[in-house]
Amino acid sequence: MTSNFLELKGLYKTFDNITALNNVSLNVSKGEVIFIIGPSGCGKSTLLRAVNWLTPPDKGEVWLEGKLVGSSSSKLTIKEAKLLNNLRAKMGMVFQQFNVWPHLNVLENVVRPQLVVAKRNKANAESKALKILDEVSLHNKIDEWPDHLSGGQKQRLAIARALAMDPILMLLDEPTSALDPELVGEVLIVLKRLVNNGMTMLIVTHELGFASEFGDRLLFMDGGEIIEEGSPKKILTMPKTKRLKMFLKKLDITSFKH
Amino acid sequence: MLEYQIFFDYAPILLIGFWLTIKIVVCAIALGIPLGLFLALGRRSNFVIISFLSTSFIELFRNTPFIIQVFLFYYVLPFYGLRLSAEYIGVLALAAFGSAYFAEIIRAGIDAVPKGQLDSARAIGMTDWQAMRNVILPQTLSIVIPPLTNQTLTLIKESAILSTITVHELTMTGLMVQGETFRPFEVFIMVALLYWALNETIATIMRKFEQNTKKNRKAGSIGNSSTTLKKSTSIK
Figure 1 (cartoon, each protein chain N blue to C red):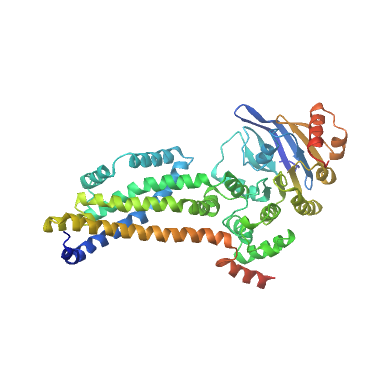
Figure 2: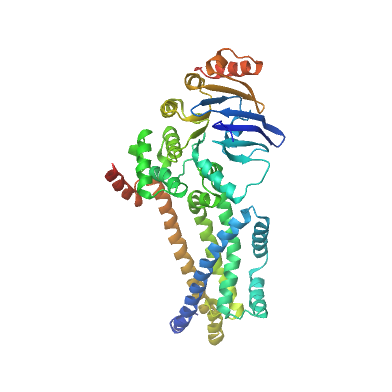
């Protein structure tokens, strides 16, 4: 269908008269790291959740590697719902609130989706989980319950859980926003390694330093629209629109880092 | 004054009735909880017909007196050619009545699991049912144990109403012994003590079970996790 790796076409979504997405289109190439910034309620989380059809938009289509993830024009058939689940497994999602599963220990959190969704056998799933938990430095916590982990450890577990499905795209929704400041670094280290490994990523964040260092592209959203986009350094140092200038000014006042 | 001899003379026959009460209640719960789960999931279903039928069933059985339900089961089922003994009809009526309440408890338990849990399960590619089974329902369990226990105790007490359709359970047996001896005080004290003993036993067991499920999650490596530890070291 299309040469684009990920293609969002004309996404439109309203919640009770609030326009969260207003005709948003976006093309992403393989290996690209895209950061999305914007004031709260600007639609950036909704955009991310539309990509894997977790929040189906009212209008528009999403394509991944030439396969239709979802289209607002028709209701999902059983076959399409099955395909959607397969495609979702390829799109690892990381949430602000971690959403690790408290009734399963660390190892089981990473093993369970491999058994249920990817249909791997237990031995393969466990060895894969141990390898990935090692990569996120949780190898000494495999028997721990999530309730006992720090926020940073929970988020690294959530990332490991997503990576175990061999995703080709990662969607990260404010992965460090719920963390104590001293725990942000350990999660960023894991994300940096993903960037260096060439993972395609869409990251909603307020970590502008991280975005300008590792982003290929930065999108500034407001009112459900992409207002500015381009190289992070250019956008952050030379904002064109008044809205972005205002937004950056506010961030400068509220945080020391920029 | 109390006639103690009655306690000894009529204990065996009361225990037979007690045993039938236990059997009926166990069967009713074994049927009622799965049916309640089914109704709770049905009520949340996207299919309008399933959710309508489930909701109707729940509301009907929750909002009518149990004794009327029992009479309807007892008199209406044979009319449609389903001739069952009073015991079986009692089990069915009790299961249907209980399931309506079990369904509402389970539904509230499912709603109490944070929404992000379903998000993360769906985002990783699980179907609705896989997400329910692997992520939501296991977390619902620890939430619903106390209210489910309460409802079970209520069900045991409600089973006394089955005496009205000639089921020879504990209350019915008590009534018969009372008719023979004309000593209502002794007889009904025994009956009450037996119900109390059964309920207290169940409540105690469920409290222990509840504490255990809580402890398991907090204590770290217990049970099957130690086996995974062994496995993991051998893999490395």
